[in-house]
Length: 189
Image (tube, rainbow, N blue to C red):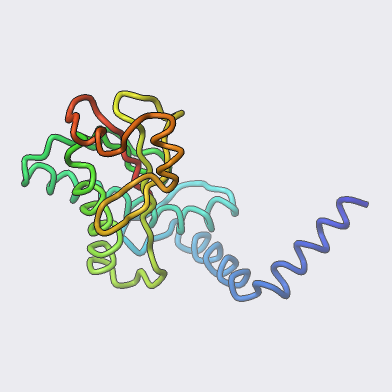
C-alpha cells in the first residue's frame, strides 16, 4: 500500500541515509522531556508543551531566527550611524525587507552581507555552516511582483538578467540616478 511505501522510505531515510541526524533528534527530544525545555545556541530558552516534530524543528529555526533579529538590529544601527535614508520595514521568514533609497542600494546590500555573513559568525563562532545572502530588488515604486534577483559585478549590484530588466523597466542606471521613490531590496540569509 501507499502507507507501507512511505514507511519504507522513512525507514531508509532515517535508518540508512541520515542515522546521525535521526539519533540527534531522539536525543534532543529526550532532553526536552527531561528538562521541560531547550536552550538554543543563542542562549534563548524554549519551554512549554510542544509536539515532537516541533521540538526538533524549533532548535534549528530558533537559532536562525535569532541570527536574523541580531542582524536586523545591527543593520539598523549602521543605517542610523551613517544617516542613511534606507530603512528596514519588516522581516518575513528568512528575509529582511527594506525601503531603500535608490542611491544607497549597493551600500545597503554590502552592509547586509557584511553583517549577515561576516559579523554574525564572528559573534557566534558555533556557526560552522557557510552562510550566504541572496539579494532581490523591486523597481522604484513597483510591487514585489516585479522583484528580481541581484548579482554583484565589480562591486555593483545589477539584475541577474539585466537585458530582461532593461527591456521591461528601462535603464538600470536610471533607477539609481533618479533618486526618487524607493526600491525594495530583500536580503535573506
